[in-house]
Image 1 (cartoon, rainbow over the protein chains, first blue to last red):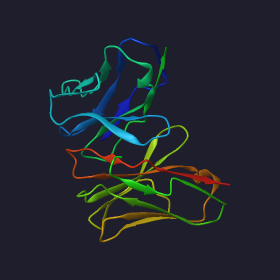
Image 2 (image 1 turned 180 degrees about the vertical axis):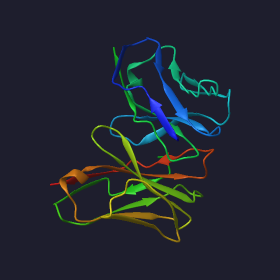
Image 3 (image 1 turned 45 degrees about the horizontal axis):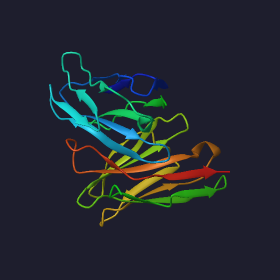
Image 4 (image 1 turned 135 degrees about the horizontal axis):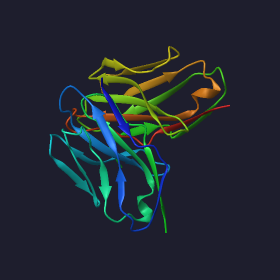
Length: 108
Length: 112
């Protein structure tokens, strides 16, 4: 099938903690993969992307590596900030498929 | 500013009424997508237009319809509104699957 599955939230961390939000996909090929972020009261913004296997996307301290062996695109950040509090969506580029979103709450 | 413009930002209307939401895509993007985001935060894909033609339909109700005009702006029409239609409606545009989607800031619809 064609789907994107991401870990359910909410995820609550303390400032400077390490973050991982899991995302796995099913596909017959190797679609482009994206992470979007939605800050409170705003639309979704593209956070990072990877267009082929083994690519690493990065932006604002966040990283995600396209791993075809595990069909995963997990989002990581080494030290989160209060301003990272938002909802994060994993998505495929070839199909109109988004994960259900993971709400992240960072405590000061 | 993402380059995708949605109007109006907020809309309050009564049950049974009809509303039109408008979206202007980012310059150069031929694809327009409409999504509904409910309180539980999930994004439901509604419909995709490419250069004026419908390309894909998601879980769009028969009471809802959309079109994309020659100038590439798009309208989403919602009729016979019900309380459960209250949600955020997002428009996104794209230049292709490799580039991802650029989202507008959404229209918040409240049906009372």
